[in-house]
Amino acid sequence: MSHLSFPSDHPADSSSSHNGGQFYSSSFDANSSFQMNPLSSHPPRTPRTSVTASSHVYGASIYETKEEPQEREEEEELEEGTEQLKQAELRVRKEEVWREMFLTSNGRDKAFKLIQYSLRVYLLFHTSVATSRLLRRPTRPPWDKELVRRLTSTVDGFSFTRKCLLLFNWLTPLTAIMAQQSVPFSSERSTETSKRTMKPFLHTVLYAPPPVLLELVQAAADDIFTYSRLGLLGKRTGERAGRFSDWCWLLATLVGLVENGVERQMIDNLQHEVESRLYAESMTAATSKSKPASSKVDEKELSRLQKQNYWLQVTRAKLAMDLIFVSYDVFRIQRLREPIKAFTGLAAAVLSAGKLYDRHKTSLLKAVSLSI
Image (cartoon, rainbow, N blue to C red; front, side):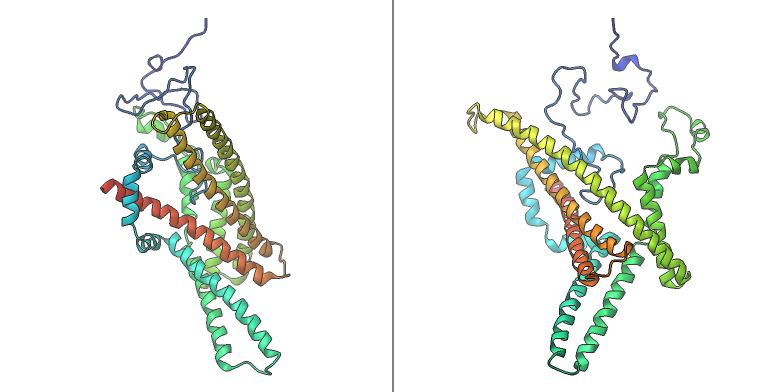
């Protein structure tokens, strides 16, 4: 007869495996949320946590750690408290969201990118109009030349400023790699034992996820290019680093598109399952007052999945714009170079700024709804 293992069968100091293997962790909290027995013949209807909670939908890395229980409780309170959410939306202003964005270097980078590529698009139209006027006038007025010169200098200034804002971005993937250097042990193990089992740094780097390594080397190459612009390194070294960074950006964009396609397929499957259950429940001719609680849960789940699918589509469009943009630099395409790079850069700036704006707005709505 096969033996069924229960939580009490495992030692008290054993920790749950990250990749599975044990159904329950060693430290069981009686006050925690309800946990479904994995041996039960009736599994949960739909997973409460998002399958893309650690995806690129809102700009986070796919290898980030999972959200804490406190954050999940706040998200559920914000989703379930409809009246609180409406009151919070009335209190949160657009200016406050932009202020929170500008407090971060990523938010300032998106704002500067919007201004930079808006000016580039304006210069394209201005140059085309000036060229048509040259067919009628032999010379351009002095103020027109001065305006173009100033705007071109402004665009270059914003580009250089954004490069400086992105300095030391390699610390984020490096921290993720260093976090995998130590083998996880239970809290009862001694610190000396953990120190003796530390993996060598080179071993950790070689076994790190490829997207994290790609992000690390790309950020390092970007810093070398910026140092060259600052005059700390030679121009030839900066050009090589910039060329290498463009190739890393191209590969990272292709990886992002593949991950985005996988995530969208998972979301579509979950959404199809929820819609099938809702259709089956609607065929029972239940009224709104006698609607079972499971239908209300499925409706909220469907709304959440639709929102995730929307932002996944926005991310796919942004990655497509990045792919077109960087392809012109990597393969040195000259045909329609300036207009294509200007429009794709502006589109990518609008999409990425919209995602970041929604993320900061959601954080403010959580904070305000909890204070109501």
